[in-house]
Amino acid sequence: MLIDDYKKEIAERIREYFREKYGVEPKIRFTPPPSFEVADIATPIGFSLAKVLKRPPEDIAKEAAEVVKGLDFVEKVEVAKGYINVFLDKKRALKDLLEELQGDPLSFEKKNKKVVVEHTNINPNKAAHIGHVRNAVLGDALARILRRYGYDVEVQNYIDDTGVQVADTVVGLRFLRGLRKEDLDRYEPLDKYCRHVYTLVNKRYEIDKELVKYQREVLKELERGSSELAEFAREVSRRICKRHIETMYRLEIEYDLLTRESHIIRLGLAEEALRKLKEKGVAVEGEDEFSGAIVIKLPNKREFKALDKGAKVLVRSDGTFTYLLKDIGYTLRKFGLVDKDFLYDVFMRYPSGKELRTTSFEGKKDGFGKADIVINVIDIRQGVLQAIIRYALEAMGYEEQARNFIHYAYGVVHLSKKTAERFGIYSKKEIVKMSGRKGIGIIADDLFDEIEKIALENILSKHPELDLKEAREIARKIMVASVRYMMLKYDRLKDMVFDIEEAMNLSGESGPYIQYSVVRAKNIIKKSEPAEFDPEGAFLCDKERPLVRSLLEIRERFVEAAEKMDPQLLARYAYELAMRFNEFYESCRVAGEPDHIRGARLGIVKAYIKAMELLLDVLGIPIVEVM
Image: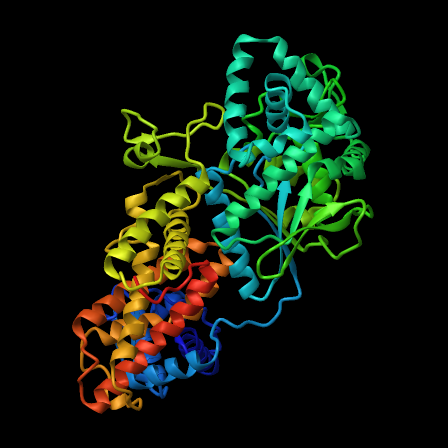
């Protein structure tokens, strides 16, 4: 049994009593006690029934307390102002915890529902930067949590290979640099080279208006898809996309499917969406400044207030599709609302052997899409466009799918002044905002390299006996923990500031701090003489109970994170456990203690290790053996 099991039994015992005696069915609500000294479990039962029974909350709570006292896992119950405060039998709770952790408390029945999580979605025109990393880490953590919770999860990465950003890079490569497909091998890594090209093109647009004409020409060729220029653009996109996949794999992030926008166009999904919207009368010919275009008419709702004209372009006056129309079409496909489907081919294989598939017209059929829930991880600035897609689903009559279409928004990433200066970005401001068009920002691989370099230096200074290959692998894992935890620990709806020192701080809230707590725990096991678990030796040190009590919440905390779709809750819980363990480590000696005390404390340490292995696996944070 864990804390959620105890709560269920308490709630059922109280409900049964009041149902039989008073004929009422109380709603039992539990509230976090202010501290574990006040209670292990608290419920304001007196207030829940005061109006119904027309009695003072204190009297009702006293009556409920007598009912709960009979439960075998309860040590005592106290009443305070309409609350009952329940204290668990500590030794029974520890035995229950160890028993649960011999199995898998984060194992759930299959829900028979499919969730498509689409994340990362980097334009394949330049190197991935630190802002893209927040998207990928949030999406990957969410997918891991939902998969653990029993959903069938499919992770997709949308590749916008026909958009303006790709056109800009192609303009730079072809019309400014004069490159052809056969020249690309000379510019590796291509994603980093194209970052500079993209910045150059956008600067040249400001002084050379003729160059903008080439952008429109490239956009048309990308949609037609049959010219030599289009083939050149596809090769550029393919190579850069592969680099993005490799970059994110450094953080142990994998995808199931790459969906190419050019294939969405060829399959006719945009036309299908346009036809359905026209049938419902919401896609119409534009007027005034929208003349010659086709727009979607939007209702007078709060989420569309930013669009003062009450419409958004679906098809431009030159006949090209906007991203919005293509995304509406593909959303229909993700939900399985159109008969048209791609064929699928292998894009690459991960080192694990897992195949990463991509949409194709020369591969084979597969079971992608047909989701019950679709989650798009896209930054908060795209909220209006995502709301339009939801409205389009409603307008086409797909109300259930509209309810299950989720914009998983997040704030953008800024840089601390110190971190920006590490990469040659100088500013008078303490917070540095990034701009892809201006070339201001940190390439993700450069960030990873820098953190690995710092970690490797620290490891070799503390453990010179380590083989260099082994030390580098540990440094990589520390980098993964540093970056992933930093991206997860903040409120995702708010902008965040990335600082390398904060991300790697061994004495603060960081991934390495959590990793180090597990290293400490494993060292205790290595250095202590074995001893049989004896509950009589437990809780002789005052830092044992808070740790055990927090560990008992593992399933409850996980379920909360899964149902709220909030990895931050799980990340913060892992940090809370690490803090409580480090307090235990500093106060409660294990090695050298008598057998019954050592056995009890070793049981607590093993429980901590198992719980952290489960949590860190879900968060995508690897465990290391030394730091």
